[in-house]
Image 1 (cartoon, rainbow, N blue to C red):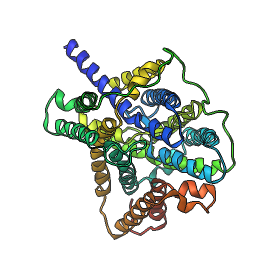
Image 2 (spheres, helix red, strand yellow):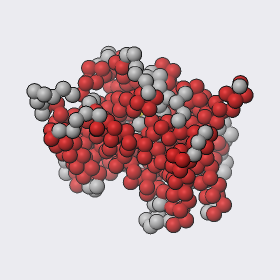
Image 3 (cartoon, rainbow, N blue to C red):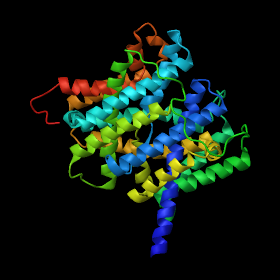
Image 4 (tube, rainbow, N blue to C red):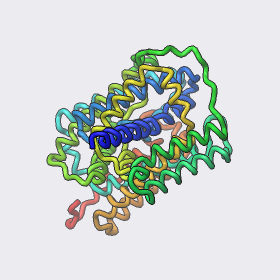
Length: 432
């Protein structure tokens, strides 16, 4: 019995670990391409981001909301990094200076989040996050990131602008393997679908396409570097952006906690405390990302999709996986090996988890009666938010920088719209 429990915990820990990596490995590569980083710089960004992810996830599950929810790079911050790169260049700033400003923005956002949680202000705005808000957030999140993940599955990375057929076939084999095992298989095959799918895809990729050779001379042991982008640059215009981003991150935190509780089938004894602590430690997570010049993390809603896909709901394997990730970040050769996980395979694994996330969005939206008022609010927010995602960033070039950074993010605009319209458009029978 003990051997069985040990084997089960070990396999669940490995699969959680693989999910942590698969959910994080693509983002540093994307940001590195945007900011024209070389392989060594991308590896450093990946090391620092993994360290922040591991520490933040461990703190959350032990002292924050105490749920097995991964802290990881979110769509909102990928959008902010992308938009600020463009607006920074348009305003005469170098990419290096923009990265230093982003350090400040992450620290400021973390400060706001910590204060929201510590002063128990997060619970005050909790009634704002109705099923309509969380459902809309999930829908827009899947729309915003599905294009990125699908592009990665098709091999549209780096200088490639056309579909790489072999890579795409391997990615879709991985995608359907994970979905097929999680849906039709039983026992351990279903529980470890993500791990099995990634192994099959990675091995197939290595056999058919091969592996890349990266520069050597990597030290065997190193600590993540503080303020690796340079000394943070403060600008007064960053304060309102940080505040608004913090509010949206709270919506992400609430949505992720609600989704996790739904998958776990539990009713929290004190949801206010859960939200406040989760928000406070999200602030600490942002502080870690800013201090270690990584990519800011939020509780990932895709974690619920992973739990629904695999049936893994225990905290202990998740804790072990986060500790394992932290330890590995001190060994650059390991990070280099992890970074060799093919992008198409990693994107396929995440896309499989997004299938469940779409289901959570529908469940939230249909948990209340969709009358004409709610349908109108949803339609306006969804169409405008999604429409902005398809606009080039340059269309906002003549607006103030703060407006550019907000209006260029469809997830922020769409979620903000549904919150504002729902609160302004009240009816006598409105009991949201």
